Structure formats: C-alpha cells, structure tokens
Length: 368
Image (cartoon, rainbow, N blue to C red; front, side, top):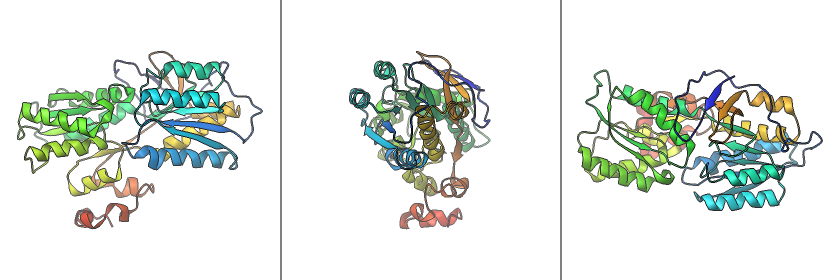
C-alpha cells in the first residue's frame, strides 16, 4: 500500500512504482447496494476543453468502458464545465437531483466543489474524484502519480541542458493553475529535480492553465532575464507551450530553449518531432479512464472485492484522510520513444503525426 498526502501546500511524496491493486473499501451511507444491476447511470463531470485530452480521450474511453462492463445497459450523463467552477457545481447538483448512481468528477476548483460533494454524499450518491483530487467526502480517487510527473519533467529538462549544467543556467517555470491541486504536485516534483542544479529565474502559477496567460508570463520573464539568458523553460502542460513559444518568437528568439510539457497532445508530439518542444509527459489515458469506469461500476454494483482491488493506494486531501486511490505511473516522451509510447499504445497513428509539415522530422528520427 502507498500512502500519499495531497494538501493545499505541496508536499514531498515518496512513491513506489508498484502496480496498483487492493485494500479495504470505503464505508458510509453512500455505499452501493449489492443488488444494483447493469442498468446504471454514471455521471461524468470534466473540467475544460482547452486541453484536448478530455474530449478526445477521457470521456469517450470512460463511456466505452462503462458500456462494456454493463453489457451496454449502463448510461453516461456527461457535462463539461469549460473552466467555470460555478457552472460545474450546477452541473453536479443536477446529476444529484436526477439521481445518477455514481459521479466521476474532475474538479475545476477542488476546494470550491467540496460543498456539492457533501450534498452528493448526503443524497447517497458515491463520488469518485477523477484526475484531480476534489475536497469533501469522496469515495475514491484515480489519477496519475502527480509528483512523479513533475520529477520526470524537471529531470528531463536538466538532462537536456547537458553535462555542463550548473546553477548559472536560468530556467523559467510556467506552472499550472493555483486552483488545481495537481499543479501543486507537479511543481513540487519539478522543484525537487531543478533546485540546486539550475537557477529558477522566474516562476508563475498560471490561471486556468491558459496559453494566453502563459504567453504574458513568458514575455514578462524575457523582459526580466533577457531573451539570450534563458537556458530552459518548465511548462507544466502542453497547451501552455503554445503561448510560451509565441512569447519567445515575438522576442526574436529563433533557437528555442528546451521546453517541457505534459499530456502528449498531438500538436505537442509534432512539436517534439520538429524540435520546438523538448519533451512531454505521456500518461496512459486509457489506463486512467478505464480504471475510473471500473471503480464507478464496482461501487454501484456493490462489488467490494473488485473495488478494493482497484484502490490499493491511499491519499489525504485537505478535508479527508485515507481516501482509497489508484495512482497510475507516467513516462517522459521525447523524440527517442514516440514510436514505443503513443504510437504503440494506439493513441496516434504515424500518419497522424507525420503530416507533410513534419515528414522530414519524422524521417530524421526513423518514425515511419
């Protein structure tokens, strides 16, 4: 069993990479009835569309898995909040009122949603936090090993600077949204790899993970540090890299410094091929989404042993302790392993990546 503390202040986590498996189930009034059959409704609340993963991967994978697990009798009630925490609370309350059997929520604001999570609990609707750890009495949590994500980003960025890297090398950190608890974990992990090896010359926490805000922050960092004095850029995800590159190019930077990312978006993979982005973090969305669907169905159908087997880890939120969880591991995505990760896993075809603009870059790294 792994125990993870996730709080408002980012903590240093010590995580094994052991496979996920079993420990005791959560109790309480929201425990599912063992008599529930396949005719169930799973509420799915996702946070935004700026990051393409939610609409392209998470939702359709969860939907397909629920249908598979319920002999196509299970239904999905779906809503996307478009980064509006208030709207997400309204969406969740509607699902409670509509008496869905279980809710999977990827919170826009993990703290703000706590009251609505409590209302679901009082109504007997189990809530599973998906990807981001919502506060309040949730029944389980499934996500990636978030501190490891930051460690992978920071370590790979340092490696990109070569053997001569030292504290004279200046790095800009464009971190994620302050309302996203995952962002705090990514940042803590990255700092554990960067501090003492390079100088963090500028650091920003980026509202709503906005590429436009990231562009403004990067422009501010360039003005402060100088366009020729930036050795590397830590970007917490792929979407913000777009704004970061725009700021660098607007400042006249033609030879881009190494830039990190996360989520292995198609455009990010193409930027890695072309050399505009150094790396991303590949997270197996099928593994996370399918685990969430399995948890939801097992919880509703009262399959306690199955539920336990999916929640071997434990996490703490600012409001609750010992939350059953599954944490999925991650891998650094660079030019060297595109074929063995996103292509091998069927996320993208080579033809998706190697369009006319990127054919030369693909040929140079043997991607065909």
